[in-house]
Image 1 (cartoon, chains in turn blue, cyan):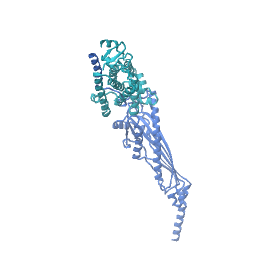
Image 2 (cartoon, helix red, strand yellow):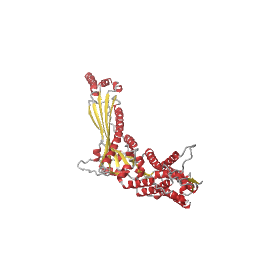
Image 3 (cartoon, helix red, strand yellow):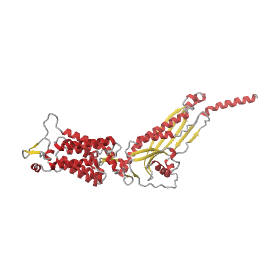
Image 4 (cartoon, chains in turn red, blue):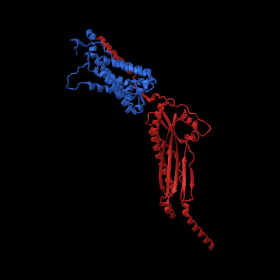
Length: 292
Length: 232
C-alpha cells in the first residue's frame, strides 16, 4: 500500500518535470495550397496545344478559385497538449468576398462587360479544360480568371514559452510566434483557345504572436489578413499586367486577335428623322430661293 | 433680283467638301482609321488628336453615307449663306464631343461618326437663321425646335426610337451625348461670335461679297455694285 502511494507520487513528480519539455520545443508548419497546373493539366501526358485567341471586347469574364487539396500539417514537436492547431481553410464566404473585391475593381475597365463570380462547387478537382468548357456554357463567358493560393504558416516558440510551466502563463503569455506567408495568383485564360493571356501574383507576410490557448484563433486571423494583403497586391499587379497585355496585343496582332463587338464602341449616328429634317431644311432653302 | 443672284456667285462650300472628302478617304484607308479613331486607351497614352479626329472615322458604309449626306446639306447651306466660323465650329465641336465622351462615357472604348458635328452645324445654321427674315426664319425656328426635341428625347429615352425600331445592327452604340454636346458647342460658338451689347451693329450677313441668307433668297435690292441693302 505504502509502496503503491510512493510509486504514484514518484510518477507525478516525473510527469511534472516533463511538462516544460512537453510544451516547449515545438515548431509546426501548416500549408494550404491550390494549383492551377493541377487543375488544368492533371494528366502530364496529355498536351493541350493553345491556339490564337480571338477576343471580342467587351468581354464577359468569369472569376473562380481553383479547387485544392486538404491542408497539410507537419510538426516537429514534443508537445502533447495545451496547443490547438490552426488548420485554416479558405471558406467559400471568404473566397466570394475576395472574388467580389477583384470583380469590383475590374468592372471599371471598358474591355470588361461583365464579371461572373463562379462558386467553387462548379469547379471539379483536376477538371481541366473540359470543366472550363462546361462553365463557359453555363455562364456564357469566354475568359476566366483562375485564382489559386499557397499559404504556409510557421509556428515557433520563443523564450517566453518558459512561462507556460506556471500553467497560468499558458493563458496570458504570447510565446507562440507565427509567420504567415501567402501567395495569391490570378491566371487569365481564354477558354476557347486554351491560351493563357497573362497572370498576376500577390504576396504577403504577416507576423504575429499568441498564447497557446488562442493560437488557432490567431492563426485564422493571420491567415485572413495574409489573404487580404496578398489580394490587394494581386489587384495592383493585375492592373499592370492588363496594361502590359494590351501593349503586347497591339505589338503582336498575330498572337492575339482583338475584334471589338458593337457594344464596345459608340458612334455618332443620324437616324431617318434627322435626315428628313435636314432634307426639309435644304429643300426649303432651295424652294424659297427659287420662289424669291 | 436676278441681277443680284448673278452678282453673288455661289460659293463653293470648301470646308464641307473637305470634311466629307476626308471622312470618305479615312473610311477607305484602314491605316488612317487606326491612326485617327477615338480610342480611349490611346488617348490615355497621350494621343490627344484622336479626341478631334475620331469624328472622321465611320464604322459602316451606311454610317458614313448618312453622316456625309447630312453634313453636305447643312455645311453646304452654312457656307453658301456665308456664315462665319464654320471651320472653328467643326474643330471645337469635334474636340468637345471627344472630351465629353472621354469624361462621361468611360465604358466606350472607341468612337466614330460625324453626327455630333452635323448637329452642331444644323444648330449653328438655325441660330443664324433666327436673325433672318420671312419664311427662312420660320423654317429655321421649326428645325431648331425639332432638333431640341430630338436631342432631349434621345438623352431621356436613349438612342433614337427610329433607330431602335429599324432593328438594324449598327455595329456600335449610338451616343446621343455627341448630339447634345454638338448643339451646346454651336450655341457657344454662335453667341461668342455675336457682337456685344452696345457695340456697332454686325456686318451681318458678313462675307467678303456682302451676301446674306436674305440675299441668297433674293430679298435684296442693289444700290451699288458692292453694297447690298437688306429689305426688312
